[in-house]
Length: 174
Image 1 (tube, rainbow, N blue to C red):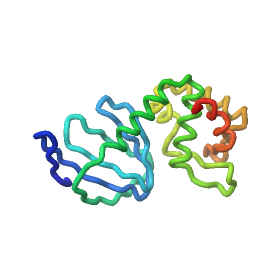
Image 2: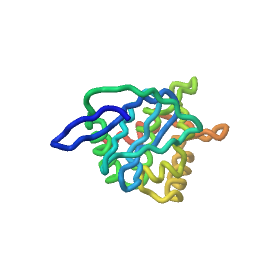
Image 3: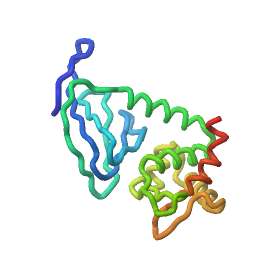
């Protein structure tokens, strides 16, 4: 499985993959979702006690394995920092910020420049785990956002009005 890297006298075995299609959740050692990855994202699987694990969320996952000489932890630490900042927000802003971030990273175009199709693989339960909220709380926030015209349910898919959602989270990022 991948290369062997020596770091501070500890040998770490790892493999790198690029996701070609599908979605995965990145989990820490405690089983908490810290990020979501989709097409074009890199996954680094580490064989060590502090490694992260991946949970496949979509019906199919296609990855391409590649070798590299060094493992970069910067992406993981950046994801952890974003996640910590997200968890400090009040409930509605936490869900709104998560929808915007995940929609921009993993959403699909709909033909309408204002609307993105939110990935089905990241369902309400996964969104609740990611935001560390109760699924019922996430459902209530999503219903409120739907009444406000920020999200729409069409053909069993959630669509996000990016412009409205950006306006909603703009005060958060200032």
